Structure formats: C-alpha cells, structure tokens
Image (tube, rainbow, N blue to C red):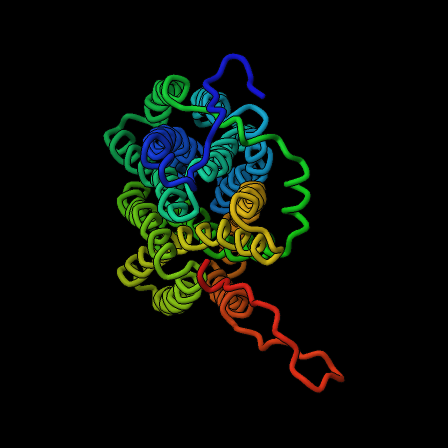
Length: 453
C-alpha cells in the first residue's frame, strides 16, 4: 500500500547483509541525518523556556516557584505528545510526518515571539509553554522511524546517534541564548533566529527523506506493547536516564540562580556544558551496549549516577558552587550514557521475546521490530515524565527549605530502585524450575539472555 505525495520504499530488509551493503545502509544513513536535524530543532523549541525563564527578571513578575511550574508544564506536554507522535509515523510515513512535525514547530516559536515582554500574564506564559511542548514529540516519531531503517546489530549506534543529535538541541539553544541575549539581542531575536531554521528543516526533510511502506499502522502492536511488562519496566529505567537528562536541563540554571545566587548570564555560562556532554556521549552509550550488553552498561551507570547524586547532596549542604557544578556536569554525562544503553535494550528485549516464543528468522525480526517500535513511544513518553517530576521536586524542595537538597535525596533513592530493577529483571539468572513430584530433573526451559540486550 502506498500513499500519494510521498517517497515510499516498498521493499526494505536491513537484516539482509547484501541488501544492506548495496543500498540499505546509504539510504538509512541519509534518513538518519535529516531525522537528526529535525529532531534537534524540536528539542531546542521544547527546551526554549528553560532558557527564557533565566532572563525573565523581576519586571516579569514571576517567582522561582512560578518558573519551575512553567518548565514543568512544558516538560509534561512534551512527554504526553510522544505517544501520538510515535504512531503518526505508521499513519503518514516517516518522511511525511517529519515534514509536518517540523512545520508545527513554527506555532510555539511564533507564539513565544508574540508574548515575550513584561506585563504578559502568567497564564498566557503557561499557555504558550504548553504549545512549546510539541517539540518533545519529535523525538518519539524520529526514534520509531529510524528504528525501522537499521538492522538489529546497529540499532544501538543508530538510535544513540539519532537521539544524541536531537538531545544536543538543548545545549545549542542555551549557547544561542548566551550569544544573542548576552549581547543584548533580547529573547525575541533568539526566537527570530529559529523561525527560518524550522522552515529549512521541513524543506530538507521533504527533499531527502523516505517513507517505509513496510511500517503499517498497527493498533494491535500498541495494545500488545502496553500489555507487555517489559515496556513499563524499561519506562521506569528511562525515567532514571532520560527523565534525569531533560529534567536537569530545564532545572539546572534555575537551581544555580535560586540556590547559589547566580545572575542570568552567570547561570547561562554554566548550564550548557552538562547537556552538551550528555548529548555527545549518548551514541557512545549505545555503542557500548552493542558491544557489552545494554543491561550491564545500564546497571553500572545507575551506580555511578547514585554516587554522583550523593556528592551533590554533600555539595548542596556545604554550599560549594564549584563542586556542585562539576558533579552536576558529571551527572549529565552519566544520564546521556544511560540514555543510549537503555534505548538499545528495547529492540533486543523484544527480539529475545520472539525467540522465546519459538519464532526464527524473518518472523522473529518482524515480531521484535513491531513491538519495539510501538513500545518506544510509550517508554519515551513515560521517561520524559521524569523531567516533570524533577522540576516539581525542585519546586517543592525550594518552597519547603529554600534549597534543592531534599530533591537530590529523592533522586538518589530513585536511582537505587532503578539499579535493583535492572539487576533483578535483566541480569539475575534464575535457577531452572523442577516440577514437584518428579524423580528426574526435567529438561530446563531455555532462559532468555537479557544480559546481552
């Protein structure tokens, strides 16, 4: 089945090495490049308000609690829209939806341009922030689309590169703000720069991307993915990795301002470093997962995140800005590494499930691709909700004690839970069950090797 007005590829078999070497890899890489560009700008629009609130001084009439609430709302919408964006790829085609979703970014950007001035009501800022949340949906559709283009053996690298290139939109918008607003250009100049970039991304996607006819709209896949326990287990882990990355990206500058008294420019000089390094290292997380197993990398990554958070608690209590900033950057790096390793696990988990059901060959590949693609939207959406929780936790912590220390203690406990779940579900090897009342040990049922996913 094909659709008018789009570039549709009827035959696609990336697991066939001959096909992959002759035509598949070149086509997949081209689609990956332009997918990254569109997703990158989507992340910039989504996290735009994390920058704008830093430069909204007393004349705007917003308290620190108002600003944390504003960024929480933006994060929430970005999480929710990931679900429909995931399935839009199968309805419209990956190339077609990339064009549409890129064009939609004009709405929140133009709206922010119109209202960004003192005297605008807080409710108006909240409404425009809601619109900016659609930028978060581009990640889900992009990941679902690219997942279908690449073979299982390369998914960790491809998905990590796709997501990392998108994530880097966070530090880029922060650097752009530092350069433009820091030079007295004003928030509207920053917004004006992004409007033509959005148009360029949409046009390039229309000219150079493709749709895969094999990716059909399958509501049954969504239902099956929602019924699968691994979808929700991975969503929990993704709260710990991506939820941390996006939550800290929105909150870092505000914490520096509120707890350490940094000026907007002083905060902006520091905030971009963590998201930049976290974005750049995400493909490495996927590559390490390809080589050593995503579950192993994820497990030890949560250990490191917990250790870094414990140091942050100490730095926060000691009011040590230097130590606090340095360790926060380390935490960003670890969240980026974990983003790559957790998302690599998803295709492998469902491929293992296919093998456990007795499927082999193309049937196993099709089953794994079907459920992993459907689950990515749900996992990405729930994971992004972690960013909402982080901003609300900071808001409550500052309201209660004037410090972010309480929030960091809660994050530390959550990373410990993520470590325990990763070990219990994906690395602990259960002993084979022996039926009661049998004299001889029954032949054990093959155990699925999730440690390698």
